[in-house]
Image (tube, rainbow, N blue to C red):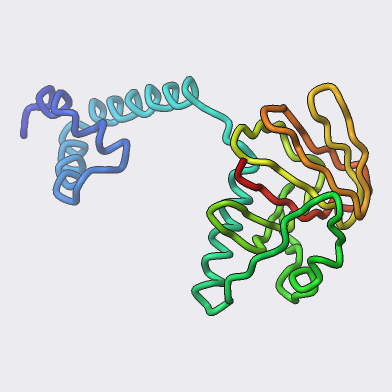
Length: 204
């Protein structure tokens, strides 16, 4: 293409701004930029501005719990591929004790890294019906609602308040708590140290 207007109308600059052009298309953009520097530069700037405004208008704040559990799943998969046998932690209940999980908690790799974010997790066991993890919560775990999973906690270290609806429950080491289905809940840490807990999600 040699006509500047035709080149702009082709849509190649939109693709260029998105970073999805081929090497040949990139070469074509560079060529047109050298021939029509002011026009092409202005067009690229305007396209970028439009895309930035669209991104801001449609921005959705990601759930801060998604990242730590996604990383925990990747870590768990890597461990299995490296030869770690699958394990099946016991199901949490009001009768559960911290010592029930000693086989996992005393492992050298079940530690909190120095650069951990607000919530950090290590998966202990996984099945289609249940996932068990150890979690470290620095300040809080944001509001969630579970419609198809029972979420259960066994507090290991530190203290926290779990707020369910308008009710608040103060928990300490050794305490068990189950979140009822379909209820908003949030975890607020009340200790100077992170609240460390066994967290289990069981299919309803």
